[in-house]
Amino acid sequence: MLANTELTGTPVTVLVPSSVRDLPLYEHLAVKRVGRFSGQLWEQFELPFHAKGGLLFTPCGGAPVIHPRNVVTIHDAAVVSSPQGYSLAFRTWYRFLNWVLCHSALHIFTVSKFSKQELIKWYGARADKTTVTYLGSDHALRPASDPSILGRNQLDRFRYVLLVASRNPNKNIAGLLHALPHLAGSGLQIAIAGYRDEKVFGGDHKSTGSSARDLGYVDESELRTLYENAACFVFPSFYEGFGLPPLEALALGCPVVVSNAGSLPEVFGGIALICRPDDPPDIAHKLLMAAKATPDDRLRNRAFAADFKWADCALATWKVLFEKSAA
Image (tube, rainbow, N blue to C red; front, side, top):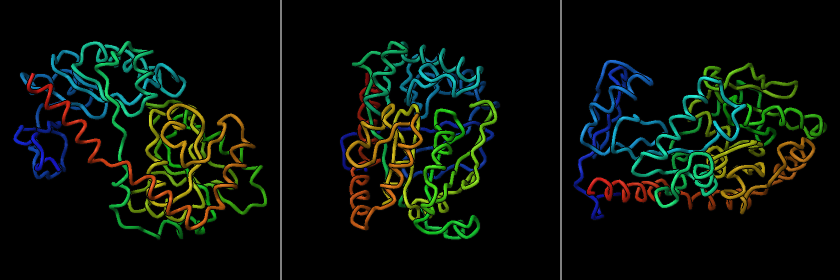
């Protein structure tokens, strides 16, 4: 993609901890193992040494505070705006780190207009140093399907509602489960896929009910199958900086219901049904409406998601990085 632009020729090295075993193979990027540690020790103390003198871009949040030339992506301000979703240690560290980076980094990327305003409000980020780059959907089309996940979990095609989320309380799994009685007689099941990490999110957040199946972690091929065969996808969150799972669902044709919170109306207001996250009857009503989607509706969903391209995100990002590296 960059080969046909004026931005070619700039050397880029991806730095990873030495503990990383399987290194990706890139056509235009070098990958290098550095340091002896991992996690925060590696990020804060070893990474800045190996990045010394260079522009350091961190695309997934977090960056060494002592490095003088950081460009970083901060997806949202959830640890401040919705702290109940995170453990005390996690939110304390990232409150401090994000505040420092919003004041010291050369540039900040974020993933929605909502998140940009959140970073300005909570961390004092400068509007002129913060760029919004929407995420892409095309990665959802790459893996092959694995239909075996349906049989293993007794899920019938177009007869289940899918939620893909971590066990963060902000994802409002409880609200979805409270909507179950209002789906009685519809024949719809609830299927929840995602991982649990109590070090990050804390607590024991149960996600199963009499008509709900907790699928746990699923791989990319299983996830594609789940999206393509769901009656609809639901994302009843109390807070979101963007909302990648609903976009993935749309890319594979799945009808989507999202809450009216955070960035979700901004990103999906033109295509998704919008529910109130604290109103289980309303969640159930919107699910029943979405489950009636026609084949034409599913085609429209795919067309909507196709406008969100990773190439567009990458090019906008690279232009800023090229500008900062030349400064």
